[in-house]
Length: 463
Ligand SMILES: [Zn+2]
Image (cartoon, rainbow, N blue to C red):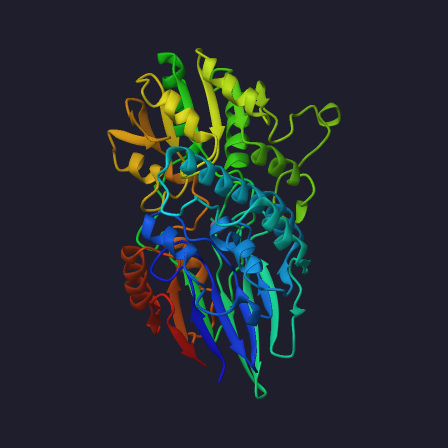
């Protein structure tokens, strides 16, 4: 009997890992890091529930760390098989995995200095060198054609419209000549966005795994551009800075797109924009080479008379740490876009430490903020935020723009599901916090009358 085991993103949004077993072979779909609370982080350190050396292949839906960030550890602990991903996902992982390793190393060094780690001496979960080892095991698969992994497994990726390269996967599992179609939603994006394509819908699934990040709510209606224009203009008038924790992949480019549009329409003052994330700078360059994944039209300015869609008037790319620190000295109004998107680490921390105590400034939250992160604490109205071991007072305005989310809202999830021509034998809701999971289960039951399961962490199902 074939079997699926939920090794992550079961009852939580992070740590996506699904083990599919058939004909004595093991395929892992996604290999994400748990992120957020201390308890979730701890899971990354526990012994992996099966011996990584016994896994034959990994296949990835997209490059986000909560879907790929455990790969270096898996490889370090004995996984030697190919890691299948499309070209954009491969290139993004080439940036994201070493960066994740770098953050782990920095945190271990910092913990050693401040003596607050439970490991003695403090260790990184994996090193930059170990992340490079994982990257050597990547093998590129087509963007949308079927790809045969083995006699047991064949996979067909479809555009999920969530980030560059993001896919949902149609996995055909063959055991004893019985074929079962298992659909993995990965993370689903939005409809009608300016940069990415709409998510394609599945037509058929025997087993379906559907993400539920926003299973309990829709994104607010209304234009992201209008809110951005309003917040930026008001903050500039007060003489403050707009600080935006943003994921380097896609959220930063979407912000650049909207800012350029607002500049063109003269709806915001001409402010310096700091893209303070070496990764965001590198990721932006990838948009020029992966046209299959987005709607942007890059053209030579002198030919078209128009600016490129991501070309801002006063943009400062600050790859070096020195330049990043100099942004602290900027006292006139400016916009600072920096990672990480949930303020769990990275350069955004020193910008928050500098700007949060300033009541003229604004912190703009533009993406999902997981439980236990600093971003969530800000969203929930925290008065103080712990950064670099200090309590930083929150006097800046905190504004959330839900319209800029990279994740399908509840009705968009239902719209994606409505493509299925027949009910799946079993639908598993994953990648959501408990309230989102139960709420989406009720919505699906009401609209489609399907069998729904919310799997627990480490639970297995035969098929
Ligand atoms: Zn994602």
